[in-house]
Image (cartoon, rainbow, N blue to C red; front, top):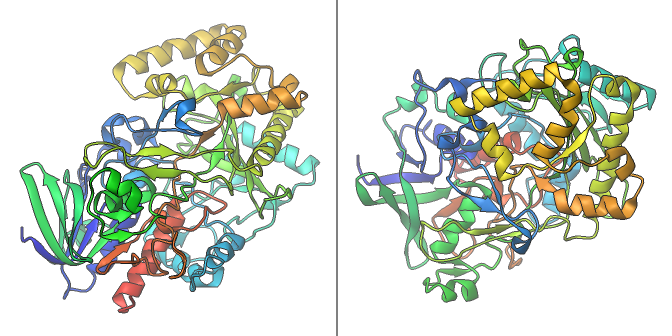
Length: 561
């Protein structure tokens, strides 16, 4: 393996796999893709990685071990945060829900002073990446690497059908195509998979043919310690491999480590707030105080319930998302489609998980922001991560409204008839341990599932105490003070960290990159991942991250800087 390349891509996550595939299309350029985790080479992928249901999410060997975050502030407690340490990153683990967001999200991106990121600018790249099985026309692509599909209405589980009836009775429109029709409403959830196979960027961009290109080199289980600079020009990376410390040199270094680890690498390399870097003895390359700031994530809560046999999803339907309610709060500080309720008829791989349903109210456009900051200059130390959920006063009323709406849905007679007593779910480290895929949990969940079917009256007590507090949700929403306390105590997040190295105008000191991902204050360094998004979108971040990677890769190939 040579140590000199045209492009070095740090991180083979959702974005990095796309960038490597696109840049290596030019046979005159040499590309190195560096990944900290394991490879999943074509033809030998593990079955849980391929599964259209995210079984891989429950396999800890695919994740950064012991990574913890604070949903609110660190003094209120830390929780485990699964981040993919494997080729494909989170796209190899998570649920493959594939919303684009809504046009207003991208209008807000442009308000930060960048050009070329409005809805009309990003739509061609959404079309480029997708092969939409259900829709055609000017809003959709049919030839891209990522298949997008929706579960047909006649295959919906009983719970989804009953929530649909609730929507009809409450005059909530049915939205057939939530990636092109941006009205408030109830609609089918787009997912990136076939019936039998996940469609991650590791699988669908880094195919066997792409990997066979002579100008593309992949190295895995190789952890980048820092970026190497010559004055303010990035010239390489220092990488800890299985064989020791190695230096690779490139004409351009591209960071694709995601919303948590990209800012950490930049900080360790001397790009960030000089006061913080001085405290750790890190030589300053560029004073960019926005590195690690503006961290955002989707805010959520969970209501679980034991489904009666007549309410359970068919085992033939592998996927977990089917439909959702996305709508606008209309509250101060809100934005279009800022609220969302996810509907799940199974919550895990296990026998018990297939009996547990879930409604998850979410705040898609939070105003609260957190940070990623160093605790030391040592690459072995994880950064400090605080999301600061509900710090902005506009957020608590909106997530409260979504919570109340979800409980109202649970009270709908057709829904109530399918389940036992609903209860709040706190996704604690203990619950994650019970969900981990191993022989012990296979046996335990099977025994619990059998017990609850034989003694269904026992489920209310067992499940409420297993997953959180035994709380009467219908009484809770009648008491505003108790409800606020409950939400503050139980609020959690999805796994969609963005914004920590955001794009912005050159005169914005808190901006980290320009509109093409080029890092301010240095040369030869670019960021292509979710960290450059100025704000979250009204939907999951997998497909938008692929769009960002496609768009900036095209700009690189066109010679834009």
